Image (tube, rainbow, N blue to C red):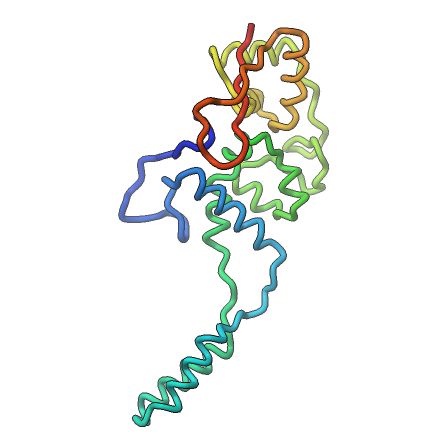
Length: 215
């Protein structure tokens, strides 16, 4: 499915299985959610104080004559002064649910996310294959991925039909898109695969994925 088109799934409209996230989001919202999650990594874990709320409560305390209401306002003021811990669970939920498919369409590898300090447990929850050593090009067991014979790559490409994207071939070969890109470039160079250009159906943010066809 082209990047930029809504990816819909059949879900119970009355519930959302992940905190703050319903899985029929359009691609733009998915990308914004991933961006927000990446931006939250390494952010302060100190409680955040809403200074405007504190100021408002102080004013209400001064202007309230009812002692019971004043007690309630003072309690609320204490809570606001203590601050609240930032909650990034909704952004992480989007990342876990959508990052793997989005990254496949964009040609982004797990190691690229690791360079931005995304925790390995979050990457695994999202469906990426990572090793505890964080070594580039590793397999699920932590060793270096074996080279794929070109004839196997060609056979997988032909099985995808008339048109396919880099992410489609990466999924068929169970490798990262960044790794498969090297094979595709070689196949284009020797004429086994034709680059059809950018996907004309792409209408989302970011660059359009390229379409390919086997000859």
